[in-house]
Length: 458
Image (cartoon, rainbow, N blue to C red; front, side):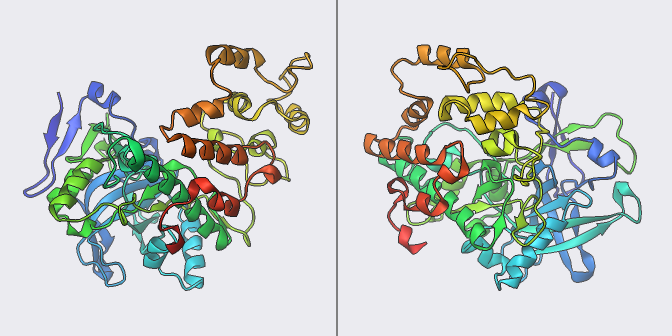
């Protein structure tokens, strides 16, 4: 049975879940990150900040965690004029991983772009400020870096925001790995919201590329919605939207001064609650009836074109085929071996469903790798290039009325027929085996599917 843990008068109670309850709740960060000194423990109801600069942040809940650290919902007790929002997010970086975020921030500063302008005009969340914390599990001489960031909403694929679902589903807000004011789960509202969201994602990436920056981990977990009017919310209201009472699971036999007593689960962003709160204040969650703007986060894997090329940390199932097949080859410096437990062969086999047989150039490159030396391609000329032709044959037998897997994806999108045909044409232009055959970002943004009212004002 879960219990509430309170640490003082006026503090936010932390709900401690049993092991059975915790299993269905999701994941937390690895406790070994604390015991090894890589991560500084943050606790609900504590204050962190640069006290000499009179910059104190009160920790309210946890927003997420990932490769580079943990992210927390905080109250800025004395927000400066350059970042006036009361509610912010703080990223506690793993030791030695904050350099890239800092370098990207310097590129924006060099271009004369402030963090606030980067957020509202460039759709990128860069730190308002950074400060060090000394000590902790790494010892007195260890320094950890904190980044103060804007508070954002749910992931860009959140169905509540898109108006595609009336279910009371929730989505992690800062997952680090997160709506629509008129979304009603069907019809024109949901289709226009989906198109607008897709356009926003493409625009956000284009703006980064125009600055010469490659993100390196561009996927839904790192694209969140920017939510307006959060400063109008009280602490009780902000807690309603961002998870309610924090939930945690106790750490068994924590190492003194190294590991926290409990690990907090990421908060869930309740878009329905935000809509209701803003409606009572006569405010809208979106922009002119559209969904909120997509905003890119987590620049830990990013690099500027003038820097030394680096490996991408994006999970293998989001990689382009050349970054899987030619991993480690000089021609493709932005790829690396998969480390997330997903077999690259499985991903390539799934790509066959959408792209057709693997081209000869890629087949030869794949066979040169250790993983590919054991691969046996069919000898039947009609099947050449397929890793798993028998599985594809079975799929086609089950879906006789569907021309291709791309058709099935479009059919499941719930779009009107005219928009669905445009969507299919766009997908065909994007998903190609070779990079030079794919549509450019400029071509994608000019495609009829992504034309929406008000796009010219962007």
